[in-house]
Image (cartoon, rainbow, N blue to C red; front, side, top):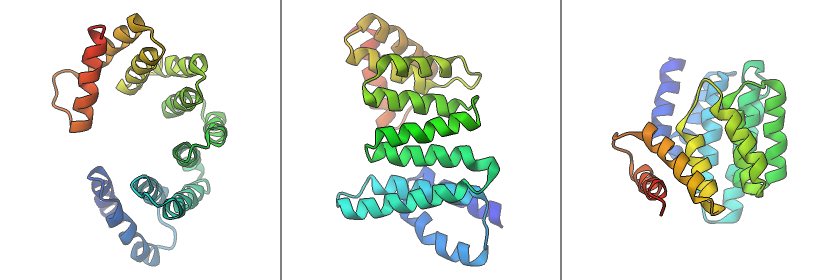
Length: 203
């Protein structure tokens, strides 16, 4: 039953039904005294993502604190501590606390130096700090990882575009578009795809 419930929560998350996840949490916790770490992960992510939709600063901060609290619980599970630090870094990043986010992601890297998500996260933090060369180092590290993903190519293309280096932006935009292929994307991804197409053409 636990696995079915978690699957349902992930389906809610996929459809951005964050409030349904949060409302389901209390009865589940009453039934199971110590759920799997994945439960705290999805609950924390629901709090974090729903906080971004709240305009009121105090209410948003309360949601983010609940996200942090659940990510901290993940640190109690040895196999999920890296994920806990990833989550704490994500909340800090969303709050604009870049140095704090960097500390959390660095801690994750110290625990597992081969985690590809840590590479891309460190790249994103350094990019937000304006430390582009350091960001590139981590994005390149990510690109050499077996679990290569579209995210790094997109970030590199957009970063080169911001810096006015059109030739490099064009190169990585083409790489990203090659992975995206002709598969239909959601509205947000389609808009991003159109931007990448323009970069690939040198606009």
